[in-house]
Image (spheres, rainbow, N blue to C red):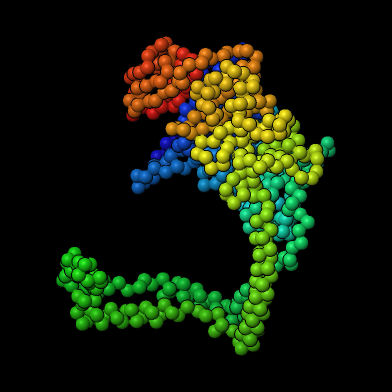
Length: 609
C-alpha cells in the first residue's frame, strides 16, 4: 500500500496585501529557509521531518512537499521518495524551485508553480542527476549528471556539470554539457566537477572541481560568450605553479592466469569451474541435528534449555546425543563434504609448463612494477598532503554567484575549525578578497555584498553582512538599525540574532533562520520600512506554544489568531482571543497565523493528536 503525501497548500496564511506590498516582518516556526529567490519573495526550506517547504512571502502561500511512505509486507513503513533542495540559488522569481527527489536515485526534479517536473537526462539513465541553480526568470538550470554516463572517451568521473535551457514548450529538454578541465591541480583525473550557482542571465555559472581523492574542492567558473560558446576558468591562483614529483598514474594491472592458457586448457578450466559451481560447491555443510534420532534430538533440546553459561561457557553439542552409528554417519558426511568442497579448480593445473613459466614471469614483473609504482605513489602522496595543508579548504557545494555574474563567493573551512569568507571579482584576475572572520557565507549580490552566519559551529548563528564602507562584516541587526529604527526594534523584541541569512539581491528583503528552542525563519522587509510603510509598535516579545490537543498559549497579547487546515480552509478565526486559545481541533495538521498587539506575526505548523 502506498501512502502519498506529495503536495498540499495552505493559502492566505500570511494575509498580506499583495497589491500594495504592505509587507510585515514575520516569523515562521518550524521552518528553515536557506535559499531565496532573487527578488526575495520566495524562500525554500528543509523541514525538520525531511519535508521541503516553499514559502511565498508576497502571496502568503506555503507549499509542502512531503516524502512518500510505503507500507511493506512485513508491516514496516519506509520512505520511498524524499525531496532535497538544490545546493545553489535554487529558486527563480517565476515560481520554479529545484527539489530533486531521491527514489532509488536522484532524478533531477523541479517544482513549477505547483507541479513536479523533471529535466531531460544527458545520455540516458544515471544514478545521479542533481539540480542546483536556476536563473531569475526560470529559463536556465544548472546542475550535475553523474555515474552511468561519460562526457568524452578520455574523461570519466563521478559527476559532470550541465546547463539546461527551457524550450518554447516550457520544458527543460535542451541541455549542454559544460567544458571541463581534464585534470585536477595535481595532474590527475578529478573525482567530481559540479555546477552550483547561476547568474540572473544564465550566462555565468559557478561550481567546483573535486580533486582525485575528493579531498579538495577548487573554484571553477563557466561563462557563455556572445556566440553561445561556453568556456571555463579556474579562479584561485594558489592551486597552480607548484612543482610536483612524477605522477604515478594508475597502478599496474595484475595478470590473470587465464590470459596464458591455450584454448583447450581454458575450455577445460571453465568446464571444471562450471562443474564445481553446479555440483558440490552448492552442497550445504552437514548439520549434526539432522543425524539425530527423535529421542536424541529431544534430549539435545532439553540440554540446551537447561544450559547455564555461568557453569560452562560452551553449550551442549548435538554430537553428544548421537549413537555410534549416527556419529559415524555424520563424520563420513563431514569428510565427504570437505574432500569435495576443496576441489575448487586451480587455474595453474590447466597450464602447460611453458604457459605456467610465462605466467609466473608476468607475475614477477607485476610485483616489481607495483613496487616501483608504490614508491612513486608514496612520494607523490607525501607532497600532496603537505601541499593541501596550506590550501584554503573550500567547503563543498558552498558556491554563490551574484545576480550580475561578477562575483563568486565561497567559504574555506580550515581543519573543520573556523570559516573564512572568500570573494572573487570575475572582472579581475589575481588574488581574491579574503576576510579573516569566522563567518560561513550564504549570500552574495551584484554589489559584492556578502552575508553569512557566525560563528561556524554555533547551533544558532548570528547574521552578518559585509559593510561596503568599512569592508568588514557587521551584524545584520546593526545594518537594519541603520535603515529603520522601527524594524530594528521589532528585531530586538523578537529575534536579535536573526539567524543564518539569505535574501533578495537588492537586500530589500532579508530572511534568516535560527534555532533557540525550535527552528524559526525570520522575514524582514527592509525596503518597506525604509519607505515608511507598516511599522510595528515596540512592546513585549510575542511568542506561542502549542499543546498536543491544539491549545495555544501566548506570551504577549495576540490581536488575531487564524487557523487553517492543510488544504487552506479556515477552521478558526478570532480577534483578541486572550493569552490561551482552545480551538478544539480534530486530530491532524494545521497552520496557525497569530498577530501580536505589537505587530509581530507568528506562523507555525502544529500537529494535533
